[in-house]
Length: 210
Image (cartoon, rainbow, N blue to C red; front, side):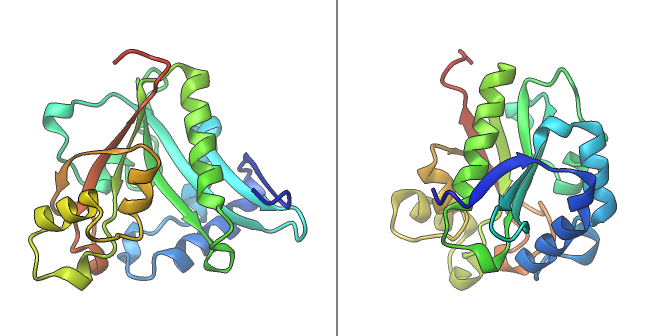
């Protein structure tokens, strides 16, 4: 990884920049589902350990970030809406005793793509999980390439991505990082690029038995 980048815990002074990065990364996401400055301030208040930012040490700019909260997961009833899981983006439903880390958001500013910054953020998340002794990480992945294959059912599309027959800009990357697909969530959020679908993915902490 380039030495010019460093993962740190995000701070209130970064909140406005984090909101800029969110808007730049998710141009198709519904306006009321975008994270704003007030949301990032709430994240830092309710669960500061779970909020990461990547700093460009040459410029002092924040280049990317991730937001997480702790919760318990019922894998037999995993269907949910994104805004319910993150309490309307405020993360105030964070459970300090939750056994799983839930990925609310990860974003790298378009100007900084190609530097491997998402890998830095995922490593920070997994390090946090190990440090806290959690069972693992879950998230609703956005299959952002699905809009180019709407002739397929979402189930067919995800199967082809899993088999390596198609590449999805989000899901394919997460699968390479050791995540597994647990199921598909209709009406997860409002974003035409993924047909409003989410793909529920799971990374299990290898240091802890499930």
